[in-house]
Amino acid sequence: MFDPFGDFETAGYLRNTGGEKDLSIVKVAEHALFRAQLPAALDYLVTCRRIEYEDFLNTHRLLFGGLYPWAGQDRAAVLPDKAISKGPVYFCHPRDCRRAVEDGLVQAQEKGQMPTHPGFIMGLFAYGHPFLDGNGRTMLLIHSELCFRAGLSIDWTRTQKEPYLQALNLELESPNAGHLDAYLLPFIGPPIPREQWRASVAVMPGLDGVDAEADAVAAYADPHVARDYAEFARKRAYRPL
Image 1 (tube, helix red, strand yellow):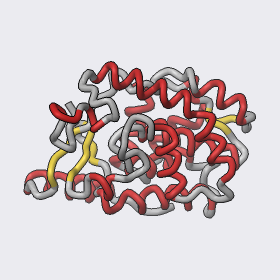
Image 2 (cartoon, one colour):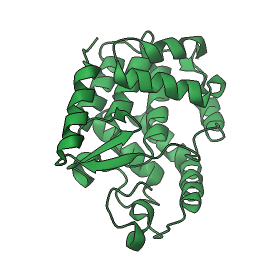
Image 3 (cartoon, helix red, strand yellow):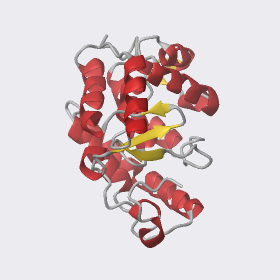
Image 4 (cartoon, rainbow, N blue to C red):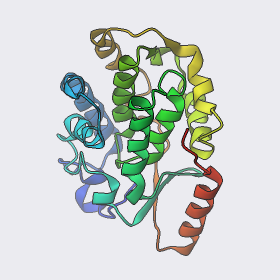
């Protein structure tokens, strides 16, 4: 059980507003809220002349604020001393959440890399992993809006969960090797109207968080954790495009 606050027995999963401890119930509520708040989140992104890190946070707050009191706050604010990992993959240090996401936003909006490197940009968002839950859905909405602005779309309904996650993990480990760009290439097409995207994303498979591998949490003060994190970051050897 992912319990980064260490108070699951008293506060429920991730301190959700109902104090619910049954993860299956929480995930149903989480996805129902996501679907209900999807129009508001997409409408908000449309109003953003340029999408900034604060808009990333605000999108998450709009989507999940009804369930998680910490929604819209990144790990630097809510869990600054803990490492988050999924299997062998570490996400960035909390102090670097903003930097990783902002780099992805710069690559997409200032350097015009979205048409050729959509996977690289998604990988930066994923490595940033700003939130304790809801990262994938938040990233997907923002990435899709960035694609629309760049004159393209990715048909996520044709992607498959396991191959995508494999490519994403490889992207996190080796961000300059083009793993996720290569996976997404066959699904890239012309832009689709936002209204069509809004209708399809609500029923897109794999977004409900069910059967997803749980994150793990550990203190950076643990020398083994610090060593493993440093080794992962060294192997990652990130270089901006």
